[in-house]
Structures are given as C-alpha cells and as structure tokens.
Image (cartoon, rainbow, N blue to C red; front, side):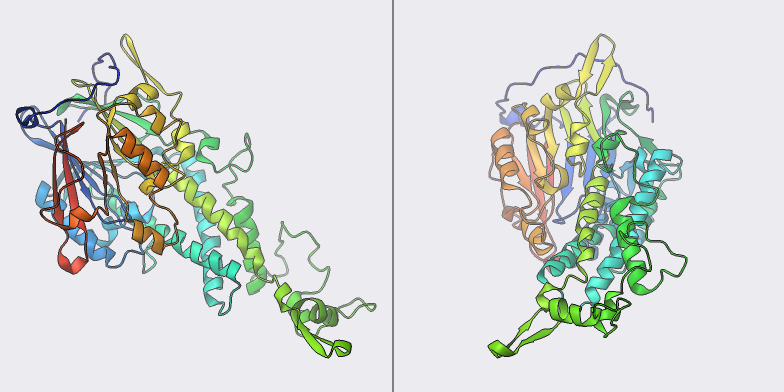
Length: 514
C-alpha cells in the first residue's frame, strides 16, 4: 500500500443536485458505508471497490459508551457482523482517539477480533509514544485521570452530598465512562489491543502532510485535517502562548491531588501543598475544630466559633429557638474544580481526534470523517493547504465538495461549528449520519445531544438526508428513511434491526454513495 501523494486533479466547485433515475441508481457505488447503531459510540465499515473488482475495506473505530445497557453484547454482535462482511480481512483500521466509546470493542470483544487479518493501523500523532508532544499530552491525561478518580471515589463514599456535589459526582461518572470500562479497564488497553491486530507498527498521521494514496484505489486521496499541533487549538493551555501545563497535570489536577493527599493523610511531614494559600502549620485543621479543639489562639475558642457560625445548632434563648448553621458548610466544595478538570480533559481528548477527508479524484466528491473533533480541532483546519501540481487544495475547497458527513461527537453543541463547519458544507448533494441515541445521552446527563440547532441546520443543508442511529424506522426490517433514495449523494439504503434480545433499534444502516 502506497502512502505517496496521488496524481493531482483540479479541484471542482460544489456540484449541482442530481436528478437520479433507476438506471443511474444501478451504477456501481464509489463506496459503501455500513454504520453501526450502538447509540453512543462509533463503528463504521467503508468498502471501496478496487478496479479489479476486489473490495478494499477501512474500519473506523469500534466502541460503545459504558453506560449503555448490554453494551459489550451489542458490540459483540457488531464485531461478528463486521467479520461476516469482511471475512475478517481489514485493509486499514483507523483509531480516531482514546475514548471508550470508540475503542472498547477491541478489548471487550478481543477474542472475536483475534481472528482478524488487519494490514495497517492508522492513528493520530497524539498516540505516538516516540513523539515528545504526544508524551506531554499523555502525562497530562494520566495526572488528570488520577485526580478525577480520587475525587469520584470520595464523592461516591459521601452518603449525603449537597446538590452541588451530587451534580459533580454524576458528571464525573459520565465523563469517566469514556475513560474506563465497567470493570475498570483502561481505554489505553483497548487502544493497544486495536494496534496489536496488525503485525505492522501503527502509522501515525498529522495534518499538513501530503495526502495519502492507496495503490489499490488509484482514484482516492486521503487528507489529514486533524488533530492540530497547535497547543491553543488543543485547548489544554493555561493561557494563550504558555507551555502545556502537562508535566504535572495542570493547576486543577495539582490542586485536587494536593487536597486528596491532605484529606486522606498521605501528605506526610515532608509534603508541600504548593497551592495552599497558608503555611502548613498556620491555623487549626477543620476536622480538629469540629471535634472540639480550641486552637492555639488564646483569645478565641476556634471550636465554639466553628460550631456557632458554621457547623452546628446555635441556641437563641431570647427567641426560644435554635438555628442550624450547617447549611454554611463547604468542607468538600474544593472538589468542585473536578468539573473544570473533567471538561478540560474531555475537550482535550476529543480535540486529539484524527480527522480524515476522503477525496475521489474522478468525481471530486469528498467524504468527511471528523471523529469527535470539537471546536479547537475544527478551527485549526482553516489555513491548511496542499499543492497538487498546478492546483492548490484548501480545507474550504474540500468542505465545499463534501457530499457525506459523519457528524462529529454525536452531534453535540460543541462540535460542528457554524462558520467554520456547517456554513462551509455547500454541496447540494450532501448527506449525513449522526451516531447518537438521544435517550441514552439523557441517561448520562449530557443534555441535548444531538443538538437540535445542528440537526435542523443539517436537515436544511442535506434536503432531509440525515440518518441517526436512533431513527425509529431502523427497528423495522421493512422501514424506510424519510427521504428518497436515490437522491443527493445516496444511491441506495439498506438496514438491519437488532436481535430482539439486544433491545429495540437498528444494528446497522448501510448507504451506497456516488
């Protein structure tokens, strides 16, 4: 398989909509994409017909969110279906990024994947152990996850958390579901299991390099748009222009680690909490004051002060009543910064998504697969350029020629930007797939996912050719999409419901694309 730049063709402007009849619909598709419908997770099988008639197959991710009931069994069904379609032969396995809902299947269905023959594995530069910047990112992720796990365990042990801390606990459980399996399996183990399916070392990709070519598919070029090298775009910087706060995990991780050490007693006499605003031996520990310690200040009874103004019942004889001051307690509120750290980590990992644009040089059509890329990743593409002999290809040009979009990050609000995203998708043949189950997203407190404004904008851009993993018609073997097929980029649509034991819904939706 060659990775050299392919021969150039002059980029084409956005095409006009096709009027397709039965005869035209019978034309062999440029690619067939089978999207699996696990609800919260990604798995996509792309089959390209080679000139000699043989299929060339690219599998992108295989995972499901830990919160989805019966998830591992459903993923096993998916892997079994992939194997039945491919005979276990995968030419390229693409791993977009380290989130459980994109890689869990390589671990939970490891036995099924053991029989696969994978020629190559593609990953982003962020997964390269020999890359210095990737190593910095790894240190950040490790420190952040350690701190978040500690806070999560502490909040789980609190039998009566405040509403604020209860919301922090629920949010952490949701976010950590991306990083760990139900039994505590690390997402790194799943990613490594995927890499081990090929006898060759993974190929690490980064944006700005010449597009990839595949000798078996002379009409295909593959552009790498993300993840960016720019630190600000990854959104893991403390302030613009500063170095990554990665070696020690950043201020949030350091603060949480320090607080956990001091609270569980592992911060011994030599331990220094660099973020504490006071000297170590100044003041009285709250726990001591709560147990009646008067403190070293002879002018003030610290225990009485804390009880009367912070933690307990205070008698008011004149009014013949007691007032409870415990509502003032914020003993554990320092753990609230875990929410900020979790958002920083989740956003950063999503921004490390590998983003691929598949260009057909004969039709000039483009397929865009952005993984879970969020705003920082998307905005980094706008200045990318590739020189193809006499023509210059830009990101705006690729997006204008995009006829098929795998919607990023399950259609969330902080992915698929308007100006640098949807507004640039101007091809009138555009169609889209959203790998989301709205009910499952609500169960993990994600709010509105997919985001209604994005769904509405895509429906307008595609003339209604938007497919969702939770579309009701997918559960019916005789179901039909709400749009005509063929139309736009879609030549044909097929689907299969799940086995009834796995619950309602579709197992996969397959589209032939022009």
